Image 1 (cartoon, rainbow, N blue to C red):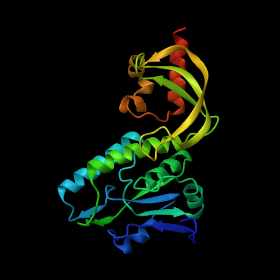
Image 2: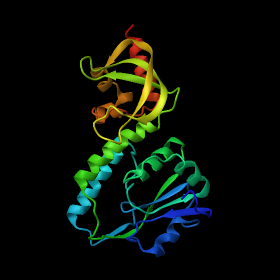
Image 3: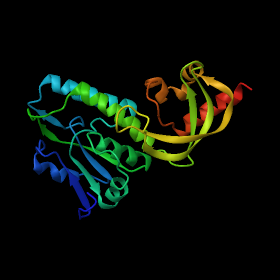
Image 4: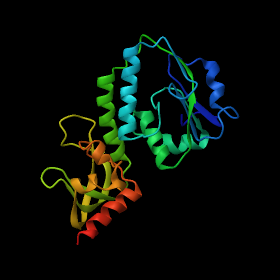
Length: 250
């Protein structure tokens, strides 16, 4: 994609499960204004052909996990048909680190962080019986990739809240990223990464999991949706709400 030319750059599945005639839907004026246009088998007007029920259920389960952990609101991130503006291509693909099934999750996550406009385009999609998608295996693999994507997004100087998950089950302090993602040589399996942090300050008082659960402003926090995910982003309002809770107890 970085060596491609043209104002718009398009990627697609090798099996062309979407008719190439649908390509026009991804380009102005049909597509409207966008930074990234992604093919969607779930957007109004989309049609799936010859897809077995088990495959549809498995695909929706994978998308549910993706929406749950990293990309809320996008109904079909894994459809292989995506169109990028030239300037968007340079901006995103230069930062891409994932080379497997989750590369487009990372691209869309980076786009969200940069507040780019993402539009889902309804397509006609034909099931390929030779597909190697496995719902359980691929969902587990994507969850581990999502952990890496969150770590890769951390930059030196970023401040993070530290949650002690074993005994107190509470947010206890603030730390700062001192070294961005690097290969974790202590891991039993290859491919894991880590960042280095330094302690900045303890919170005036710990903010417990029970307090977080009872605070409406934190109802959608990642910690409540999946407590086993080691790294998760916080919206600015969520970060501020936790700090207010810590100060209110002093």
